[in-house]
Image (spheres, rainbow, N blue to C red):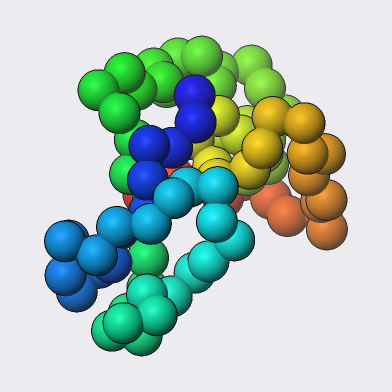
Length: 79
């Protein structure tokens, strides 16, 4: 599941492509939020996966062809 777009946390009308490598809205300098379409990954799909943040890979803004780099992070909760 890929994100549908990035959205400014201060002004939702400021939208950007999810393919852009951006973390801050260039207009407001506010953090960007990752937004998904109507279909959302059920959390039970994550059950049984390795206990790292990459168990939620489908919900993170990373291309399907990219290989994530891990620094040994632990059980990062998805909030």
